Image (cartoon, rainbow, N blue to C red; front, side, top):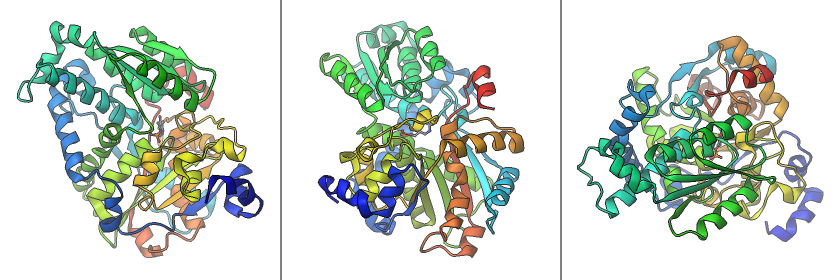
Length: 435
Ligand SMILES: *Cc1c(COP(=O)(O)O)cnc(C)c1O
């Protein structure tokens, strides 16, 4: 589709009409091909994921020192995988679907340091940048213990440099905390969605928080402008960053280990279904990229977005990717799911995964809130609204007749993972409001 055909297509295309009318939409991606083919849609590969994993390993002693909550995991920023059978049963009953699969929650909501999935990609990119600077200026070598980074000399070194980022909240929180800990100056450009407590927390750490009236797209323009004007400022670009993407991709290796530890088999007869909330696309995209490398065609990746911000679904469906926004079809991009309030998807992710993301759907804010409360009631787990986007995925797939190459038996025998992306640091008052 060409952009100038959109207005015309809105007259007759059912999916576009439903998206524009804020209805819940489901779409199986017809462009999906086997991993053997699709892996060549990006120049990134398995070695890049391995490189990112090794970099996180080099930083692990430093992370363990600075963030004692990571001592148990020896400085790795990782989350639990837990079964949520009561929630699965409640969901299956509510939607009257036949199959109640083995349902798990990947609790990135409770990742150490910043309590959201951004503690993977966001923190990784800050570490990546810090390492590049320190290596270039001969402040460290790859063989050094990175505990050296905690010394005053290195702190003073990083203090000459600045990191800037634009965010709807969680990315800014992750990057701000890590950048401030290393000693960097840091500016976080927050969109209007960002929650007050996130801004307060960052300011308490000395981060410069700039509040914008506009949405994420506008905050990112301002952030880029600030960074362009200052040669010592590094802009973390959520829309295009490959290192952010690779930081997320490392999750797949760790998940593979967790599944093995829990004796969960993934193969053709026991596929893995992963339900991922999507904003700009970096987090679910990077995780999908990693999962496809880890499990090939035995993993199916499903992206979930709010009905008012279905930017990835719109970009993939029209094949316009970054060249169309939800505002272009009359949507407001206003949602309680602040982590997903993005009007224009990452072009880099859209192109890299155009033939890899298996299924995309949108859901209403009310659905997210409803299942937020149900998850609390049935499993005593609290998440932020965005993190519930994936929760209805297994029911949605059944309502849509599953995926074209998946039988009911494979679906029933498979393992289903709801990727919980945020909420671990919600203040008490916020939790009360949500419940
Ligand atoms: C950022 C975020 C997402 C989605 O990640 P993107 O990289 O923007 O697609 C999902 N949930 C929460 C809570 C987030 O903060």
